[in-house]
Length: 64
Image (cartoon, rainbow, N blue to C red):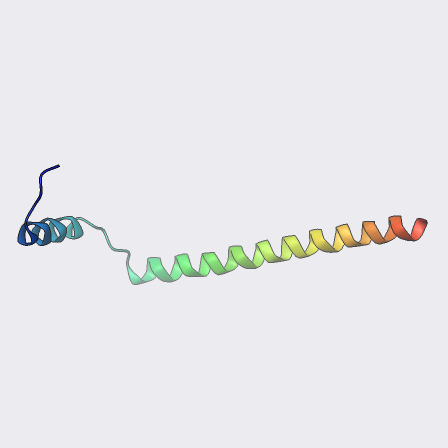
């Protein structure tokens, strides 16, 4: 691999960064809200699964 000097590296880095499409403020807020909603739904789902497993296990143990 050919080595580049620091000036070329910085120039190439700036060229690549200029190609990046940065999200808008609205997109960032919407994505953040969706992450929190999905995390809350996942937490509720696993809480319900945990309660169901605990109830079933207690029923089995109380049967004996």
